[in-house]
Amino acid sequence: MSTVRLPPVLREEAGGVREVEASGSTVRELLDNLTFELPGLGERIYDGEEIRPFVNVYVDGEDVRTLGGLDAPVREHATVVLLPAMAGGCDRAS
Amino acid sequence: MTAPASSLLDLIGNTPLVELQRLSPPGVRIFAKLESQNPTGSIKDRIALSMVDAAKLEPGQELIEPTSGNTGISLALVAKLRGLKLTCVMPENATPERRIVLGLYGATIVDSPAEGGSNGAVRLAQELAAADDRYVMLFQYANEANVRAHYEGTGAEIVRDLPRVDALVAGLGTGGTLMGTGTRVREANPDVVVAAAEPVPGELVMGLRSLEDGYVPPILDVSKLDRKLLVSNAESVAAVRALLDKEGIFAGVSSGAVAHVARRVADDLPEGSTVVCVLADGGWKYLSAPFWHETDVEQSMERTLWW
Image 1 (tube, rainbow over the protein chains, first blue to last red):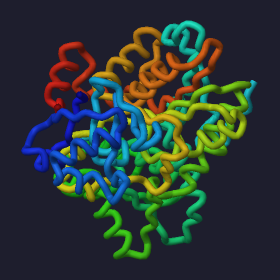
Image 2: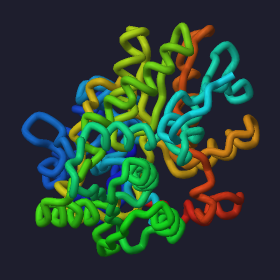
Image 3: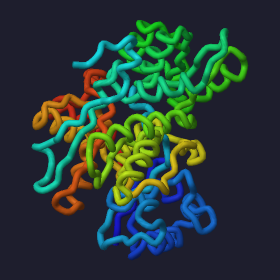
Image 4: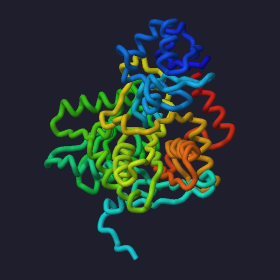
């Protein structure tokens, strides 16, 4: 089982919780298992077969887009983070 | 001996590299490129000069840019020395330090509503530019002259100064540093690992009501990155303190994130490797941030703990 952390904007689809558990040995397997349980979340994360451009998925702190995308491996007890894509440097001054 | 410069703008770039001997893991050498040595103290001087000169403003035209950060200060310097007017659009809750320094450089400041955050400032600047022909918005997130400044400057300097680079680490903001520097360094070192240090987004981003309000800068091509690592606030601050404690480098928060990733990347490289990390600015502009003391870190982290 891995822990999946959800940003506030996606929590509604998961009953308001910050974290959910999901299993899978690749990002695809894990997200498929997760979104089978939470179909609303699937619509927000996926655009067809691909992760939406404005969604970033990190496995143990690394963006899966540089790890082979949905085929990236996920170890047992990994921490997966979903975040809205956002240009950096924002709000740091406020 | 170095010849005296005829303008401060001639002193942009050619920043020094220094080895981080105490922060490097055994067998790997990490070098830091000190962008705080630019005239206004940040890497943004490079792109401000490049973007303003590429824009070739006509008489009567003025610059407008949504920024409350380093880019505004750099544009203010370049605008002043090129005889141009600059308006900066920023959220009304931007820190007083930013307003004061921009005002001193001669920029005009326009406030956007606090709740709109940086996206709101961008929208307002776009509206103002669309409504008035005088305004030219350079918009660093989509300006190829941003990338070019790093290809011709930052990247070329690293290639000139180091015979071999195995990894390049820089912060991910507009993507300009990573795209331009990465491309140039890769030309000379085809196997280089280009790694992005990405700060965990701030409160306003985490409070987005819709994913569609997110933003990917047009100049950023993630497929050109070999690694992209998320860095927590706590990790960034710990690395800022390590840079100061071990190397005497007083760096800004994004530099902490970069140093953190540089060490992580260095740990994955074989002995004898060379890592270059680009430290974008110094710590001076962040003195009022609540994380310079141990207890502050925990408290400020507590407040911004999202999970």
